[in-house]
Image (cartoon, rainbow, N blue to C red; front, top):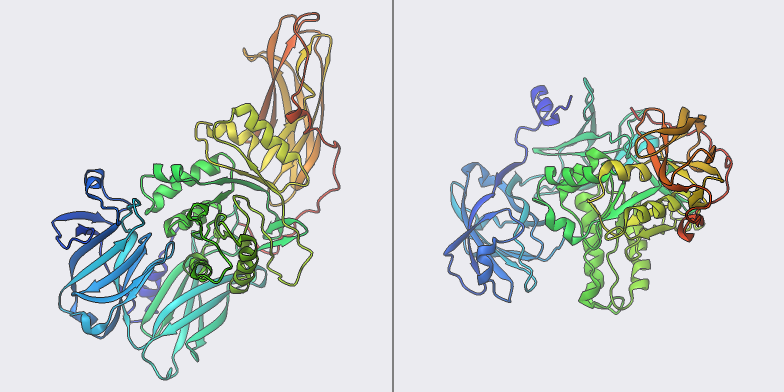
Length: 619
């Protein structure tokens, strides 16, 4: 049962008497476009774009002004007040009661403004105006959360970053405070942690002496923590109270490392089954601002067996990370670098510093999400890209070592590990696979060939083809896949069908006591052969032999298509293959296409992978 940590702490009297207060700015805003100051139209914010009926008035400059008035309570008179815009997607300039407060040009990070106290009038209505400078012909509104925030002027929480160390049983709290204080006067940092979704989960309470405006605190979570991964998306909720301020969020206990050309999550191999989210997919979403829209998209991926989502040159809003945290998806957001912009790097221009700083801002705002497993630098720019990527990975690894960084173009090739001193690491090979416009049998053959390749750590689809239904794709794209190696597509009734079968196990350990059965049938579901193929343990990894299917075809008297189906116990993991049989002397035997015959690899059991001994629970 999910509990609200804020509510529980309030009931226990543990919350500060005056935590952060907010005023939502959602709703109607007057707006003017271009250089005009005539606010004679209105728009509803937050919104990703202007409505089509207003598109005809868009000027080439891309400038739009939003304005509204808001009542600021008199109780905020002695508070620090800030404006939070989650995702403007463009440069913004803020005016309060006609006085400029500053500007901000972050692309994928929230815009946060400290409002000069003298310009705000508590107890009255105040006018807020925001100038948004979109790139020409790219008209986006302000999306995500829009709100005024009030905190204590004396001591307030400026920034929180969380680093999980599950095998040490701690989460590191990187806390930055700000305010008008000169001394701390025996203040303390109170940290409350509770496991999400667990009935009767107790609240762990820890207190730490406040002695600096920036503190690194190792907070004890437990001797046996609940791990977060694609199979067990366990979450914790953390509350942090300092003086009269309070911050709350969720996090997950997970570890990612790169060792011997293999990424591992929580010390078992991570086999990629990824997809790149393109602009077409994003444009089809009802909204990019709410969690439900991302849950709907991500469930389509999970139902088809995918576990990694890459966002080329894009970072989704907080709602996407929240949804991925709950479902158990690994995300790879990227910085704002596009090849068609023609920006040369490593030549001393401001673009270098901007991309470095923007990448760090993504970590600051979204790095606490366990689904934020990897990060890309963005798509290729014209010049200096290789040198830039090397420096980018070095800086980012130093800034946040609990995430893997990728500098390649449209490909997941992590180059660094959590252990910077380990130079033996070699990037795992992730194959790019065309998905859109490809025939289903060809896609199935490509992915099965990838799952058989010991030297390949997975694949990344170049887009999402939602015309392939979830049940069909799950057969050859899931953590447990049987793979039959046919030598040809058409047989004669004088032949004996001989099909070696192996297995791909990408779970988090060996699978104990599992059975695999097979049957060969026609379109009318008449079964010609079948039985138990395998009974025993399937080790973690690839190329585990399940046996060889043999069937004389002399009983086939008419030309027909037959189907081999392999089913694991529980019926959740099924796969099938079609082949044709002709009576002797009719038809033509056809060898399997090279793309499939080349996938026949060594059969028999590979050296057994030891059963994973997890030090943390995965309940």
